[in-house]
Length: 373
Ligand code: NAD
View 1 (cartoon, rainbow, N blue to C red):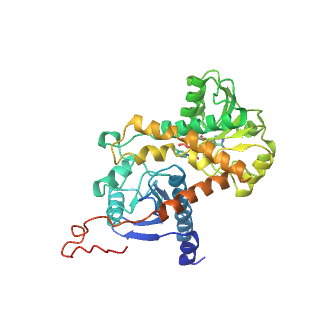
View 2: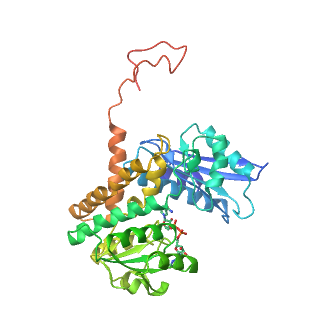
View 3: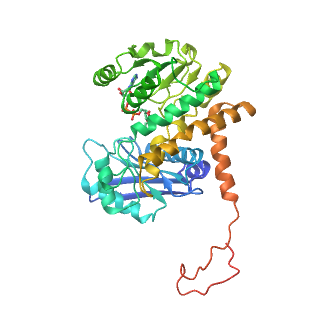
């Protein structure tokens, strides 16, 4: 598809290509929608086979961020950055500082953070050149490791799902199956264990399996290929995307799917299929938004209390989405999109009033009382 056709059809406001041959920087930043605020989303570094692949990725990811911020109640728009290159060989201080200068030139329309293959150290280099980044080190006023906050959000989403299905919020004695016990799965496991859940888990990393066994001895390990066959109350995908697909959906013996992984449904039709099978699907991009909520408050001064207070609301928002899904007889993923779109539309329509003395904003111009926006 031609570039403008893609941008236009997906509704992006702006797509910017940055290049700096001195440090081999090739980056694309996509700003999808800034109705609610500056576009915030991480930067991913990936050895894309083609430029088109990089563009498709950044367009898709930035649009996802618009929906994620909107449904999470954040005053942020959606954006994302990609750097084309091999993270093992092409990273340098100069590359991330050059990228930071380009971000600075966007004048706050886009705020970046870590994403796949971009670490806190890389963002620290970006931060030398622009303050329009979050996820900086805690010693510099940042928010540190997002995993415990992402896990807390997933836990709140799980409580909402249990309330919806069983009429009781508690995880006590519920059987929960964790697919993946990496950064988020591990933290989620600890919350579930504390709440009294019975945990089955799987992973493919020996060290992560050992760490989990040590922290939660009562949890039972299951082979990765058997994880979809376990009878449970909650199946929690915390590894990769697209785990709910044609091969796995018929095997699930669960009432609820609720996990941290992004894009768990291989295709949208799998969300409709879950609804038909009477399996409640927790709104994925809302319940894994704890990490985004956590970095979003860096600008006003991060605190653990503020972060948790915000993330706790995932419980109520999830229930609101389940209600839309039921009232309008639509799948949960469709209801989540609908809620996000409704918020953006409603805010875009609020009355714009004259903002006061504009003289100081446009020095040298006379103030006009009948200023029309
Ligand atoms: P991670 O890499 O730390 O953990 C993923 C775990 O899944 C690893 O232990 C890995 O060995 C395991 N795994 C991979 N393939 C597997 C398979 N086939 N079967 C079983 N286990 C497998 O990642 P993370 O930060 O914990 O994130 C987990 C998911 O949540 C990802 O999809 C990520 O995009 C999403 N997410 C994470 C955050 C965050 O704050 N880290 C925020 C939002 C969404």
